[in-house]
Image 1 (cartoon, rainbow, N blue to C red):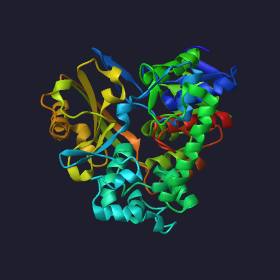
Image 2 (image 1 turned 45 degrees about the vertical axis):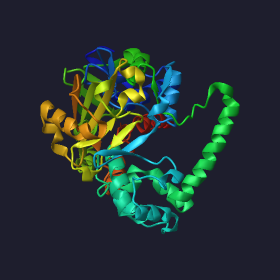
Image 3 (image 1 turned 120 degrees about the vertical axis):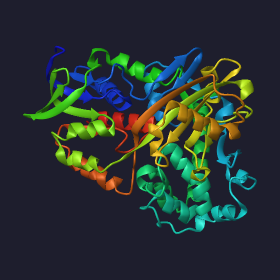
Image 4 (image 1 turned 180 degrees about the horizontal axis):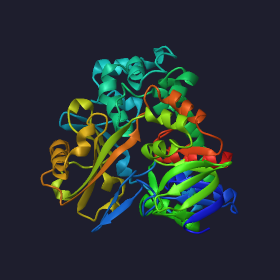
Length: 461
């Protein structure tokens, strides 16, 4: 195959984010002789997964870490020979903003009794969750579900900031089954969240005992602590890309797709042409929608009704003496009632002490989302002013950061609204045989969800 022409490919993958890389890796593991090629438009693979280093600071462009139960990514790291780092024990706490104070989120039902996150009436309402009708609001919005089971106060103070922190969205608009299918299954199987959590606690205890027997003193690979590849999240995508070797090409932007016999012809902006029997589009929403318009207009039409939230990431670093808060946790989330642009702030150097030199701390704030989509249009100076004003009181910031980095992400998190499940079915029906799509606009938005979907598809195809 030449750079200009690839004929007779078995599989062509467009996009080398985590979905494209994980699919190609798994596919070639099972079929090492297959003629497979991955095209990446930019000069580097990995998409938003990127680890930056600046004068002793290490910060992420995408996810900071993964939950302990992220089995697919953990398995990928093991296959690729990557060492893993667990987050520091100090990062276990989560906070919610209440006025100018940060309140610790209760880690157990027992802690809820003394927590100030919810008032007395809301606590009583929450304790009665097991008496709610089983099948009410499961097919509606997250807000409908939360009001029915937890009450309005819990929705506003806890659920809304949590949803904004994960999906950057509005719980009134987002589908429970699309965003949190496991929550719906918990209620269907156990009758209530309370009963499901009790059953899960028993199951987890049994799993941990079994893991302890299997792994001896080495600890459980299903530890609840967050983890990441040593050296940062980009170590994973870099290793996947290196494993693909000549199967991966960067600076190769696809501009169009045509049906050709029983396969697909992909045209690059450079003029290169690639003919493949099977095509996998592993692209963000906008890119997939554009390329599908030729070979799969019905699928493109399904995606045309989908919107996505804008986000801005602001990394800011301080001398430790200039931050009064202990930063003894993962970070904090801000409710909509706070009225600001900041959705939440991660305590990055608490998650990874090596992210900042001794005597310095690293924070990362996310702004915008459905609450404030216009944050994307603000200048760096305006964004930093919002971060200083909104984070200054809760964190006790006494000076401006000595370093800041701003990244803007237009349309980065697809909105899983009440039409999403029907849209997903329409998308699947509109894809011709041999053409598949992977990405965060189908079943899940997190790194683990994307890697799991990609590997499962590779194994099934």
